Length: 227
View 1 (cartoon, helix red, strand yellow):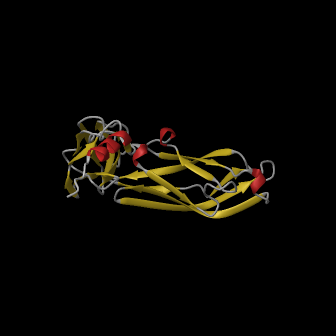
View 2 (tube, helix red, strand yellow; view 1 turned 60 degrees about the vertical axis):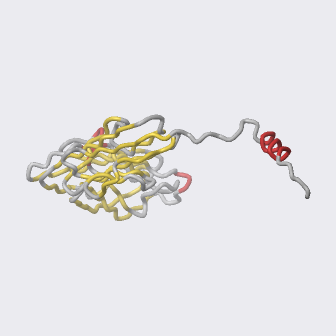
View 3 (cartoon, helix red, strand yellow; view 1 turned 30 degrees about the vertical axis):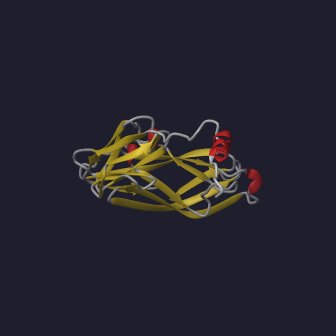
C-alpha cells in the first residue's frame, strides 16, 4: 500500500504564506443613544443599527478599522440638535472604529408655523454671485435655529452643469426672520444668450412642516440686465 506524505504540501502552504494565517481583527461595540425624549431615529448607513422611535437595534459589534456612517432622522415637529460622544456636529457622522464607542444623538422639539415671503425676481449675473434673502414669517412661537431648515431651489436653470445656476443655503448668514441663499451664475462660455429666465420654486422644510414659494429666476450679462 502506498503511503502519502503531507509534509511537502504543508511546507508549500507555509512558504506561500510566510506570515502564517492572518488573525481575525478584534471587534468593538458601537452603541447609539437617542436623546431621552426620542424625537427621532439614529441609523447607520449600512443598515445594521437603527435606534430610537422606529427601531430597537442600538448596539452592534464592528471589526477594528471598519468605516461607519451614522445619520439622524428627526420625527415631525422635532429637529436634530447635534451629536455627542464619539461624534460631533450636525451632519452625518463618519468615523473609523478603533475602540468601544458610544454616540449620543440629540433631538429638540418645536412648535408653531411659518410662511415665506419670496422676492418676485432674482437676477444672477453670468460668472458672478448674488445673495437671495427670503423673509421668514414665524407664527405660534416657532423658534428653531437656521441650520434646522432644509432649503431646496428647483428650476430648469438650477443645477451643477456649467450653464446652470449653482445654489447653496447659508445658515451662518441666516437669522430668526430671514433665510439667505448664495447663487452663482453660469460660466459665460456655456450660455449663448445674454438674458434668460425661468420659473423657480423655493421649498423650505422642517420635519412636519413644508412651505413653498415661486418666483422668476433670471440669468443676465451684467451691464445689460443686472440690477
